[in-house]
Length: 456
Ligand SMILES: [Zn+2]
Image 1 (cartoon, rainbow, N blue to C red):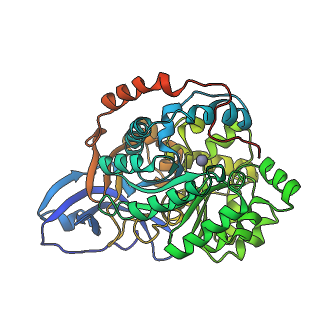
Image 2: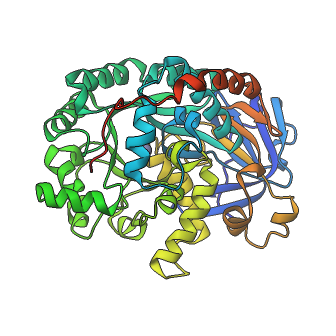
Image 3: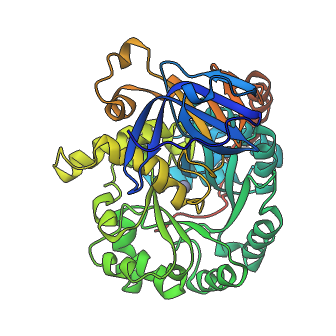
């Protein structure tokens, strides 16, 4: 069992979770489990991870009995487009060109602020129910997403997306939003610059983005090398892979979150190795399986020390915002791709889900571990169900047997957002009904109207 902290045993705590098994990180970062543990929260921060006995008499404003449950850091959805829940299941069983050009981008020409906010609220509800406490979002009308995040109680890193086709206006709006929203929602919202991808944002715009990122100390979040075909086309057209395009633009010298990277090739590895910025990759395996793509080269990236965070992408391609499922799929797809049953163990998967995902969204020192001083973003996972009994190895049970629906309680910044499966900040039937009323106008496709063309 890893060392646990004793903390302050007399001052009233805001929240005490007791009697649980706690997922803790040892000094070397190794994941361990502390039995009969307690988590003490004061001022939105984890004050101590200690024994249940140590807090038996501790006065607390709120107490949660965690018997039979695992307390662990909340999951992080490292790449999504939360309002796209409005398009869940609308375009299935087709290649990505058709998906973008005939469905998603025509429909997105009808987006309204109201659809974005309602979609984001529904997405927040889904994520809280699935044990997600932080998400990195990449979309339009992000002031409305910020409002949803503020209301829901979640933590998020938000980026207002842009294409070069919008002229300089898109990039400027992304910067304005990143500067004005950073630190809002009591510090729960951080921001990124969000160019869409190297195939929709030209070299000049990418270089200007890198410059702005350095000038303002902002991270950058974008799609790149989404699949092998994009890498092949980039090589044919420009003689450079998408990763080399990013390097040339100076983006690998910024804090960069790359979504997908399933098209990252062997020649990209030395490029990533010499990056001076904090470069990370988000993997969302369900969508790759659906589109028939390869997957993110997690093993090669691990060899470079590049963190790989877990993600779902938007629900229009992934159908769910279930990061728990992404964790399980990542393990299975990695074993299959590498033809190695020993690669990507359950403990490694939990490291991706916690510490690596936190680093990927630029919050490596604030979240991602149950440790004194970290923000109190905690979930409780019930392992008493028939599908999770008996428990021989907690890590294996979490990754291979438990499901997102086993998350009973979700806490962000010490505030309980879901208790015993009941959402405390959001009214799903009301949000879903309001969104339903907006859908007929949203999904109408008119000849030739689309926000962008996919030709990558
Ligand atoms: Zn995406």
